[in-house]
Image 1 (cartoon, one colour):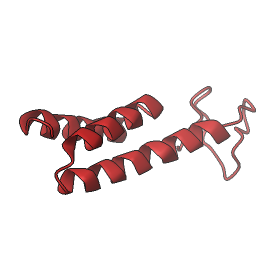
Image 2: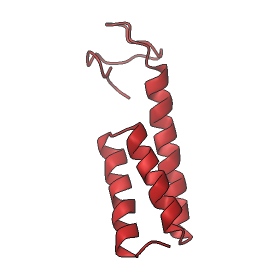
Image 3: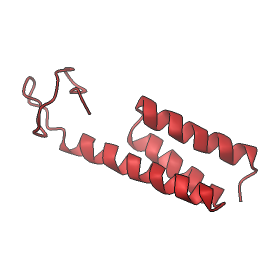
Length: 86
């Protein structure tokens, strides 16, 4: 996360925005969990476990709807839909 989602200030090294004081600890934890879900989903997809992969992609989107996460999760959903799930 490069900018505060509340005031859009550039973020430093601390989990708190220096401009508005917003504590971003939970937001960062959600972003990290979303990335973990996508990594696991891609591994599952590679093993042919598309139902589990789609479930993890959905979880990732629910945690963070940023552009990269949305695109990767969208690809996973597309792949699952095209390959008829497990």
